[in-house]
Image (cartoon, rainbow, N blue to C red; front, side, top):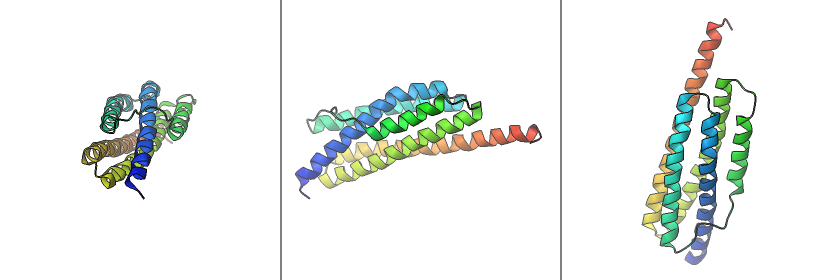
Length: 169
């Protein structure tokens, strides 16, 4: 593959991720509002700030290539956010709703982990150390968020089990 062709694919993938992050910036406040536990709400609020940083990093990479980040809509993220939005409107109890929100959020994180891993590898092949470093930072933050969500999910499950046990179930 020609380097110019790889660069074209790289920019196209970055535009897709940029669109995904912009959509997430709009969705995270809704997810925070739907969360019942303070820990999950604060987690979503913290990830919003982090996601805004991801957007800034992507914009920095685009500037380095003298490209504009707009022009593409990430349909994958659109679908994931739509599914997460549906969870927020279900009639679940508090713990169940938070568990469902965590599941939706983890699907988003896994999507982002895959996307950032791919573009980081492309940046490395293009010899763009600056972009590779920025993308690696974001990739690690996405992995860390996924781990935090897993931890929250296990705590919610334990709390729910403890309540059920105390009720004689």
